[in-house]
Image (tube, rainbow, N blue to C red):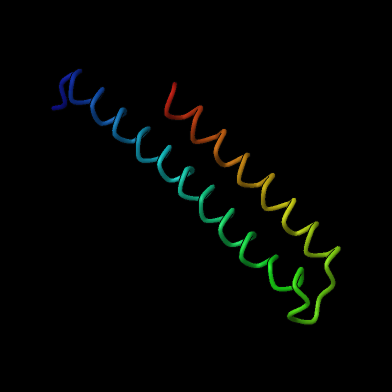
Length: 76
């Protein structure tokens, strides 16, 4: 049977791992959108630069959302 301290430790570990997961999602989405939006800005590839800017902005917003979720989970 779990003691109260063991349950608290499991909950803390679960919260920490979930927060780290959202931080990693934030880093990954930023990296992918940043690297994916660079080639059209320099004229490489078939898409236009305005689409690339919208793609980059969406990635930044998504990264911030994931960061905030991770921050709130870790500071709960």
